[in-house]
Length: 112
Length: 117
Image 1: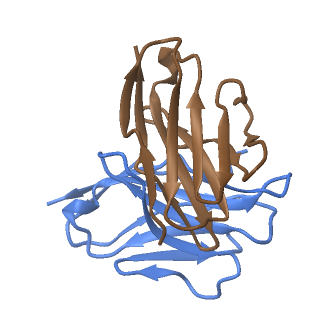
Image 2: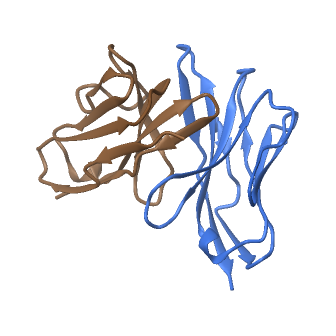
């Protein structure tokens, strides 16, 4: 199966700043997604990263707060903008092919 | 309405015994896929097993098997011969096409499994 390298693995950020998370897949994948996992919770889909076009956001998530890029089939970034302590979560990227969906290692973000 | 329902927030199982983790789903898409993931305390998501909606046989991967009952919309995970290392959160997930035609994966709330020596 494909391997996703996600970085950074963790960060501590000041409120009001922005953090960009990168995901690199070692093979082409059909779909890429970004998720948030708040402490003790399940995964919530933020958006579907579309190659070469604007991401498709889920209800409650907006592009100004979570801009996403996907310039090709193997790479995507998520930016968490103007951070507040409520953004402290694990952020995970996912790649999907028919029959499997797999994840990066996750980014554990703490906003202080 | 919940797309994926896991009704067991926590489960205990004796080492070497089998355990079943429940998952029911709701979709109108005729073509969908069901996944199970394991998340240990380290936080990484580990893919365990996949079942496609058109697959005729239940999926199996080593000690993991998926009891797929399409008419009942259930996809329970069976772990045989439990090991201490199986203690983790387990998530059921479903991939389906959304209203825009994009495939997306939705997760259940998870079941925390603890294996007792």
